[in-house]
Length: 413
Ligand code: ADP
Ligand code: ASP
Ligand code: MG
Image (cartoon, rainbow, N blue to C red; front, side, top):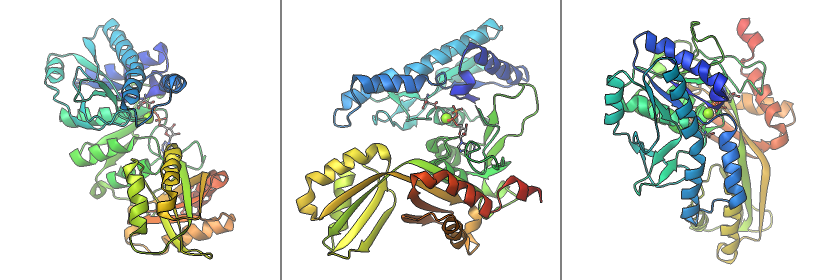
């Protein structure tokens, strides 16, 4: 059972969490609880780090200290929840990342879990103790504390479920399931009863922050059934939530299941790059060496000379990309570089796209009707993404949600 930040926002809310745990424990289940930091706490800790000196990837040591600092939020919440469970008469204890242990690689700030040799924790559970695990944190090979990237407690929870062979991983949050789009963007959003791992993976990586992408990857690889549920309902009421499961277990298949918005996007355009073999390899080699993840790429003939190449990345990586490309301007041979932070990516996702035509044309028509200009397009078998001006992001999501028949009114009809 995983509880996110809003579910452990204060001690009163933690008592409710304990009530949820009690229901499962009293029903005879062995329970591992994973908790996030109290709402707002990780943001506060990140801001402190930024004040002290923003993490510089070239200075690894800063990132190591960043992890030591931001991991502290989960230490507090896991201790408090264990304490509350003890008060209620249960045998419970907290487990920090290094104690479980959650072994990760050394990519501080966005570490990946390598293994969880959870013998000690398994023994504790077998002895009837409730384990309360601090989410988001692990320990790197050098013994230093690591963290799994924002939203990483989801991944902690799924990783424990996989490591312990759990029957299920229940992710409790502030919404009662996975919706056709972020319910904060559209009141028309509908809860999905089931979502396939594949669709959920695309949704998570394209902006639906309800689950961290890595947690879905792990769930898919280890076949962990994941449920998304609300911790804001009565603990003993029956709950359906959303089940993330194999595509074969889904009867009702939609052409488009969900629409997502990703705001963490930025675009760079290099104008009049010499149009010759090896130029793209050179440019993207520089970016790869700088550790920058590139997403959408478009190359087109320039009206002046050569080609224009534009590509997107996370907004947080823009400054580093601009710096790397400025340093090598003469070797690359571009005439001008433009960068734009005011872009967002809107995507439509659905396994039904594999076998249906016209999905892209519906998307483009719907955006055209709202007079929204498309800057970049990228597709995969089960998704289409477009890059548009940031101001139109939410409008585009609502328009597409309606065009694909996902609005509430349509479903009732
Ligand atoms: P937690 O703190 O519990 O981990 P998060 O804030 O990380 O919670 O994730 C839950 C939020 O994800 C919801 O409040 C909702 O606004 C947002 N969200 C974005 N897309 C979706 C979606 N498709 N379905 C449900 N929630 C979504
Ligand atoms: N507390 C961490 C964060 O805010 C991890 C999580 O909540 O999943 O990103
Ligand atoms: Mg989260």
